Length: 308
Image (cartoon, rainbow, N blue to C red; front, side, top):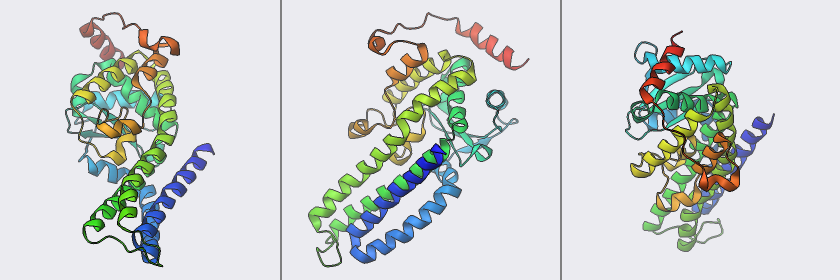
């Protein structure tokens, strides 16, 4: 019931933003156009948001034949979580990251980058996939997918406002259109407003997904180590990502990108890692690194357990 309310509230807020931008851009005619766009986006984001997001990143489907090890990990974790095995997609990007999308557990998708498979240890991959399945189990995926689609529409309209300034802007007339100054202000504030909405639905759910993911995986060590690596790699080699979909990923793919970092849709990595390792909040800055591990032996044991 709570997730249904959150979905309804999200749709209402983003629809309101779209209508407001339409009104500011073109007065009554702009409002009618925005109303049509909002209706189309509401319907489309519910039924096709997963396809829209996957197409943005040119994600390709994989299965038990083309990626047997990855499929086996997902299938094992899905069984532990009492979930149907989701469809699995691979994004051809070197920066490690992952997200889940879809409208319900029966239509869920888990997408990972090729960099994540190449860079992470098996236990870390397991932790990341458990986190994404936690989003499926907690029914976060519909909310996140709708936010991505609708925020994209808001940013598109804001971009139209900027372009309209080059062609004379909108007259301050009885229809309610904005002048050139109003268009400039709106083109800056609208994307920020969309990101604030994304933040409101994303930060709390990431903590919850971390906790649920650790339970699915059996412990939080793999996920904690993965988060540290993900933060480091995404900071050094920023992923090619759309701002409207940043909240979907396990870590913000746009971290460190100037103003975008002020509106981060994710809680601080240090706080997430501390929670997973049971470190008290006031000791987060002093959290000790985990003891060195024999990575080869650990990887061998991991795959042996899966193959039993």
